[in-house]
Length: 347
Image (cartoon, rainbow, N blue to C red):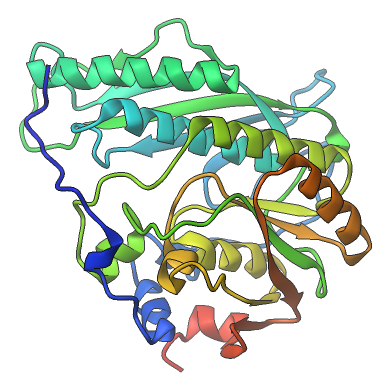
């Protein structure tokens, strides 16, 4: 059974790498999907009380300590409509990968996933195509990540549509922490910490906010992803946390590496000084949203042990730079300080 939608094959070569990265940054600052990073969210990151754990991250997720339960529980909710009608299997695998990666950056092991399809007419062939593909993607991802699936694999809303609404898949994932003392948070901790990215960067800007908002291209297919690579990277981050080799972790997600760095720096009004990878296009390196990447903060005293462990795993990782007192620098160019770049991007 085939869908009626056809996404034209997209290649990065049709987009020129901008010479002025600052223009991209300041343009994306007003993107409605990224502006909350700067203006609307409370990025305070109070010390975590093991007796009452909460999350201040930007995702719809949280860490909860239930009365009488020895370790915290974690829940995260993610949604996807991009290309769901064209390739529901891949869309579902990507969505579950994102949720599981988020779990890993909390220091949690994912256990259970539930899925819900909205705006689907199951009596229509296209609705059946989406439901069937979503079910297959759910089962594929659950097998790779070792997840149990809720009592009904895919739930539906049944209603008469009175307008054009994009099919949307929403998944909720539940996980468990190993210990109260092993909770990770996304924010950088102190000036001088080293910043590493675990996972491989690609010349890939497909399905990114940068491509759609800055270049006006929305039909680009999916970003690069690999379920097996995702699992290895997530397991590695969990083990790094158990060994106390990382102090923070944040999945590279919406807005790409640059906005993930902002989300990591803002809680304590810190900055970052990084060097991009000369082998990757700079726009793809900073704003691409390829899957399977996690940003981690490493204390200088643990750097050698971290590098030794990562070298043994043979998982790609990249030394980005270090945490600053507040200045944002990329390739030796200053973009101001974290409060100025966040509040007055035109200054």
